[in-house]
Image 1 (cartoon, rainbow, N blue to C red):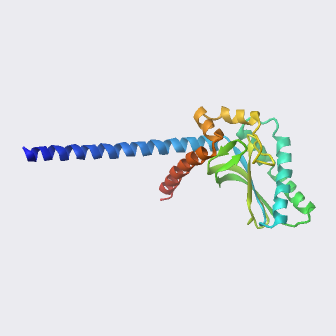
Image 2 (spheres, rainbow, N blue to C red):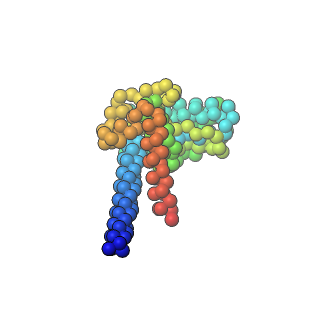
Image 3 (cartoon, helix red, strand yellow):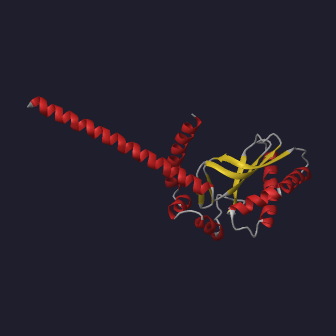
Length: 221
């Protein structure tokens, strides 16, 4: 009788652990699928600007911001009537040579002879906050501008929806820009990026990045 009881107990524990493992695996796969969907939806909704300075010297960093301002002024002018990310990217592709000329002219007007490289593609970005909107780390479509050796600090912003402004630490994203982003995301996704609790944002984004890193590792292997 005692042996039967032990056998039943062992059998129960065995089934319990099998169910627990299967449940944990299901939760992991579900979370991974959710993270991929959320990250994809967010990245598919924005087009970013990435400007890289020649170096970290004060002069090169100041030049970076001047190039940024010139490019944003031009982009805002030609994309004023755009209502989708696809329109903005197509416009950027069409005017790629103009972006190069504007960046080069700004550099030369400030007394430098640095070369410039303009590229439109899908690039990796860290977690970044723009006023009261935060975007998780990941790969985003962007217009990348490399000045000179491109070994200085980066500057990022979002060209569509227009979230670019000079002081991102105190700026507030325009309601029109928020509405465009909200229209392209689920309520849950929009709530994730517009939550003003920095600790909560960091925790949520850390989970997203952790799961994404696992997924990238699986793909690379």
